Structure formats: C-alpha cells, structure tokens
Amino acid sequence: MAVTHADQKELGKIHIGVVTEPLVSRPLVDVMDWLKREVPDITDLEIGTGGYGPTNHCDMRALLHDAAARKSWLHEITVRGLRIGALNVWGNPLHPDSQVASKHDADLRDTIRLAAALGVDRVVALAGCPAGAPGDQTPHFSGGGWLPYLEDVYRLQWESRVEPYWSDVADFARREDGELLICLELHPGTVVYNVETFNQLAGLGDAIAANIDPSHFFWMGMDPNAVVAALGSRIGHCHGKDVAFSADNLAINGLLDRRWPRPPADMPWNFAVVGRGKDSQWWTRFVAGLAAHSRVQTIAVEHEDPFVSPEEGIAEAAAVLSTAAQKAGPIASRS
Image 1 (spheres, rainbow, N blue to C red):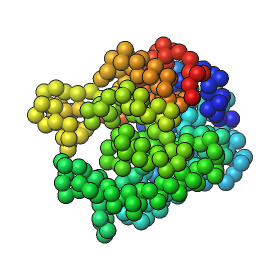
Image 2 (tube, rainbow, N blue to C red):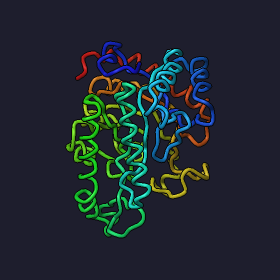
Image 3 (cartoon, rainbow, N blue to C red):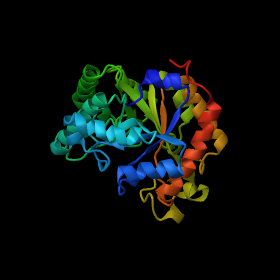
C-alpha cells in the first residue's frame, strides 16, 4: 500500500526516488530489480501515466478499472521494498488544439482517480499553456517587456482558460481524495514558472501544490532556496536535477540559446546530473530547506543530462541526494 503524508512524517525523513521515464525501454520489474541491486538509496518511484510522457510502466486502463490488476501491480512494487512516491502526468490540458487538450485533461483526471484508488497522495503535472489569441493553433508563452507583442496576453489567458480550468480540476481532486496534492512543476513555457505565477494559480484551491525542480531556477537566474522559503508548505514534491553552465558560451549566447541541447561544445548550459553543477554542500542546504519548510516527501531524481547514461546519472544523483537527506535530519515537525 502507498504511504500517505501522515505515514511519511512518522518515518521522519525525506525519501529519494526516481522518475522512471528515462528507463521506459525496460520493463518496470527489470527497472526495480536494477534499482534494488545497484541504487539502494532509491526507495520511491515516480511513474508516468499520460500527457506527453510515455506510459510503458503504467497500464492506466487496467489499473483504473481492475482492482485485481492494481493489487498485483502494487505487490510487484512493495515486495521489493519500494513504493510509489508520485504519479506523473506532464502535459498541456490548456492546449489550443482541442484534441491535445482533451486527451491531456482526460489523462490528468484519470491519474487523479488512479492515485486515489492506489492511496498515492502526489500527482505531478504541468499547468499548461493556452493560445495567445482566439484562433491560434499553438500555445503562446506570455512574455513581458522582452516580448511586447505578448505583454498582456496572460490576462486573457487567465480569464478565459487558466482560472476556469484549474478551479474545476482543484475541485475535482478534492472530491476524489481530500489529501491528494496536484504538484505543478514551475516550468518555463507554461503559465506557472515562478513564485508570482504559482501563487496566483494556487489560490484556486488547496489541492494545488508546487513541484520544485531547482534546475529550472538555475537557468532562469532564480535562487531555489529563496523559492523554497517563499512557497513553504505549498511545496509538495521535488525533482532532483542540476545545470552545468559554460561561462564562455554563456557570455556570447546567453541563456536563451535555441539549439539546446546540442552541439554540446557550444551550449551555454545543459541539464546535468545532481552534483555536477552545484556541489554537495549546496544540495545539502537545499534539502535541509525543503525539510524545514515544505511538505516534500520524496525528491525524485529526474535524469535529463543528454551526455550521461540514465544508469550512471541516476546512481550518481541518488548518492548525492541521499547524503544530503541524511544530513537534513528528521522532518516530523513540519506542517
């Protein structure tokens, strides 16, 4: 059975998990056996259930509608001493293409239903991005003064799409499971990417929480520790990912280089294995801040380093995060 937030507080520590997406070419049982054998620091799984992400490790139709299938699937996880830290349904339910939006909305709602059935209280998602104007066929990120023709687009987006949609989803989640948190990843290109935009959307319902990925803040020039202090208990989940910068390339092409992630020799920045951008001391301070202020139960390694194999990167990142979590100490006093 999945572990709830109350159970997690009794355990007294933040657990290390892994987003299984980089390993979807392998059956889930093989991935779990590899984790137990090679990366014992990892105890929690974050499994993809829809949206843009692959669903190789989760047969949504079977698990949602067949209690015996759910029991068997969970048994394979728990018998190995693992558990589900979160279900991940990253997508764009606000997409101007109605077919994309409809599918991603259905995937999100089915993921919420499945989480409730499994006893999982964390769903990771993206807030999405709608059209910039009626008739647009692609999403448009709302820029400020640096994109003056899109400067006020967010107002129309908020009133016509964002507020109605996420108010409804927050209510839906509360009806399905009053303890479940939809942890929206603060992600550039969506309508939630920093503290100001998250706070606006989080005001629509208590079910809405934040998923923190410090790598996004690094390349936006933000301070992840300041974000953690600002959002506090509204943070429900965390991804472990780093960024490596090239000072010379950054000086001439900046953070917005369109060629990411290749050619590697020319990149101003790349997502990196935890510890290859910031050192272990930084990660220890970051995890301690999460332990003191947030409701994070799991820091899930999200391997997106394009130049390191998933197996190598996941093991290396887990070791850094596990050491940081041990130094962070107990979390039983958190709200």
